Length: 354
Image 1 (cartoon, rainbow, N blue to C red):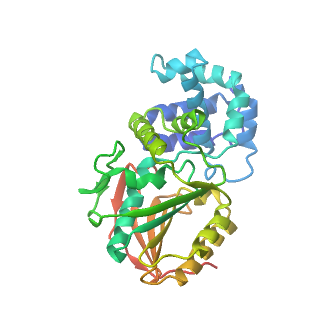
Image 2: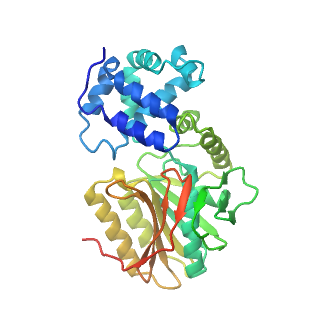
Image 3: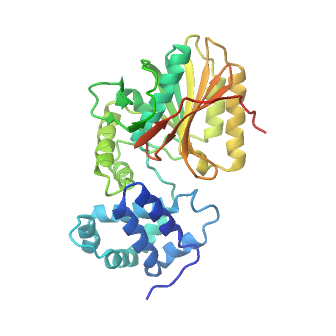
């Protein structure tokens, strides 16, 4: 018999999402985890008493990654053999592991997800191609919420975007999302500099960090894990520059630095806004808009956003360009970048932050 914990349906909610994303194994893990929450009272209490929006905090993803991490460590035979598809007793394996590792799971879940999904770089590169087509200038990249900074290395990856080749053709990281709609511009994107910020940046040279990142990859999506391993190898040769700082303070400082003529400054972020408060989001918006008002055609500014809509109905790729302030919806995307539904981009007047 299993006890019911109020609020525990966050795991089943994430299970439904995982199944729609083509991960039935992960969905089954989450569903078994919810049924067996009584085995892990610390974890159950953490989920039940979570102070904010459980969906925005991605508690289901945190739980799934903690279980995946345990399976990868091999300390619990039933769990590890479940992940090797040697049996299908999800409830038995989850119950035993959760009872033995309750403190580990609860501690893991207190920290935000660190997916650093490399395939999202395909959407970012497509948006940069539009900006390149607009301004014809090389880029200086500024990323908010960089995690390990793998997407700062986007110029070192190879892309096939709706029939358009981009990036480094010989890269071991190949990004080829399922593409719907017309292709993006075939504009050669040149990145002169890339720098990011994170409250807790991850060191890609650290084995524990690499293992944590791999644990956040869905266990039944091996191609994502292979791509991540290749990106981590590139990061050893080209260590991304990620500053440990508050994103707003850092962004204000970077945007106040002199911008050389003939260079486009590009601020981008992916799956960051859900972890910010409303006030923090507005502050970021005001900071970027203020910098945009100082931009000119020789020193343009662009903002690329790969984020859920407020109602979490879809992930939108949006591009805003200054000095015009024109904002466009470029695409609707798979949350991990597996597919991109490219839109012609309806022009909209920029709405100043309140």
